Image 1 (cartoon, rainbow, N blue to C red):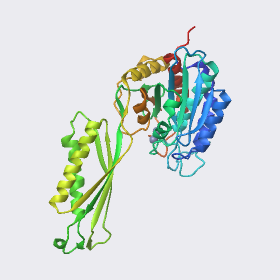
Image 2 (cartoon, rainbow, N blue to C red):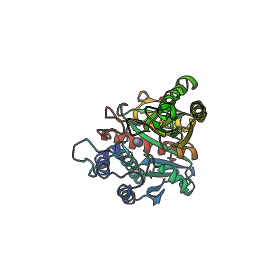
Image 3 (cartoon, rainbow, N blue to C red):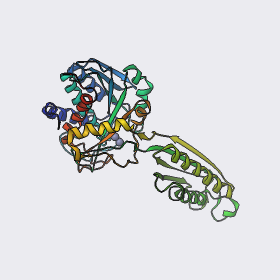
Image 4 (tube, rainbow, N blue to C red):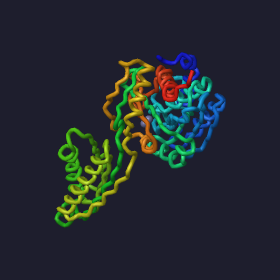
Length: 390
Ligand SMILES: [Zn+2]
Ligand SMILES: [Zn+2]
């Protein structure tokens, strides 16, 4: 089956929803306008149940197939939140809220899953239950975790869960996936170094935290280059250094922070252990104290093998064999769908957004040409996972 014809017939309608959502972006959990639109459309489609307020502002709907011999329930998740970016695009559907923008394509994800819900509620051509999940706060607020913590998986009896993200640079009509780590685990660190302030002309009277912080930043770069296996992956980036105010004063302390991205717990633990050794060693050598704070972020997004292979097969059914890369290298960004994959087997897939600006860029825009592709993927996933008897 190529792109679903019935869904192609909704293309203009789904595009209108997408552009309406784009005009009214909300940050983190403040996605009330989008959630209200989603809930009202779902009711209009005549789904079996719509529940609002899961994970604060998330929406979940249940669509029962015309048979339920399989007893299976498949969850499909879209994210609804935008980013604190001033949109540079001009056009009829530019963001109406200055400083907020759908720069990650979650407007498209939401609209496509709504389109699939409309089709599934109309056709019901499957044997089991489809659950559509619209989550808030993907961009740093762990909305996926909030929905899981609200008991979503148990309440709706979800057996397997699937997610999708658009990917700039991958042509429209193509998919990419692998059967392991798809996106990195993200952690943040803050390092506070306590030295001893002094007159800038009398450094021997103090202990200079700026000089030592500089050594630390350099030393941290040896972890990825000298400690992590070259065939594994890790990123350690220092993104801020703060110390001092005057030209003639050695400050008392220095602070710097940054992010660590890894694809498995072993490497993650190794990076943090080496950070501790290096930072405490350097601090001790200079008779200073160092405080290391780690702020654990999103876990690694790890696909389950069987479900990832199934998702690749679904994508092949929609766009053809040669348009699905089933050995895609991971992306070192993070994704809070990881929390759902820790709860249930499932898979996360990338879908081409064509030659657009990159994700989180002020000129990014979701590609409406991809709508029938993504919505057909969702519809096919349900019909293939739980085929109705003739
Ligand atoms: Zn994003
Ligand atoms: Zn995103």
